[in-house]
Image (tube, rainbow, N blue to C red; front, side):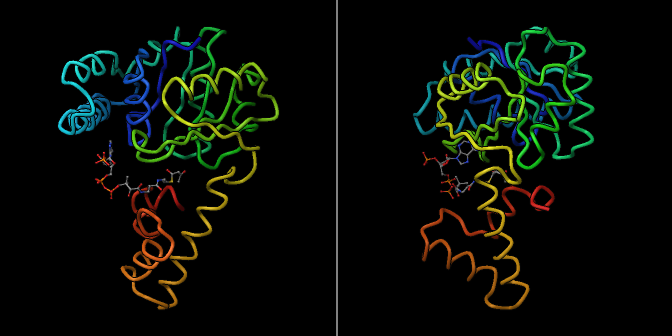
Length: 240
Ligand code: CAA
């Protein structure tokens, strides 16, 4: 059973994952490369929990207890005894391979490792680790505290036991899991990214203004935000 979760990266995805894990009662170690990045991540979680307190969805005492369950650090060695470590660093294959290689050298052999990549092959990343059978894709969605989905992606080597533990973990942190094959864009981005690209092409061709394209998809298709606003939310660098 997963009780302690390590997270590599305190950015948008990392701090969101830290928040949902801690709110679900898990102990979290959130690592980034500088104190400034760690503190930014912790302060984002603090602000996000405060919003829940203001809306009376969480008590002030629960906010404090949730924050206490998150340790922010620049010392990756503190992850060594976690039950699960989720890599949520920048979306860059070379960087992720390096992080995973370095990480595995310091981890207990029983630790499961996951990546929050939205596009890089899970089979390829698994091969960079010393535990490809205990490695899985855990694709969270932005903003993590709000989006209900956790897309699990099995690499060729991912064991049934690892998949079962990931399904349990999803339930524990209040997410609904779907499982996709390791294929470009997995299930969700394979569909979402071409739609966002089409919105960008429509803008480029002058079919309509950005505001009209977004309003069209919101009002005509009931999307919560338009595809161009969504590209900004995800980050144009990540989209690229
Ligand atoms: N933390 C906690 N709660 C948050 C939050 C955050 N960061 N951001 C918004 N919320 C909550 C608000 O408190 C609010 O809660 P209530 O309904 O209880 O009042 C609710 O979410 C709605 O927020 P707002 O009223 O501020 O604004 P909104 O109605 O415009 O919603 C949104 C904002 C939730 C982002 C909404 O526009 C939305 O769902 N957009 C689509 C998001 C989406 O598609 N995400 C997936 C991106 S793709 C991805 O992540 C994967 C990838 O690999 C590319």
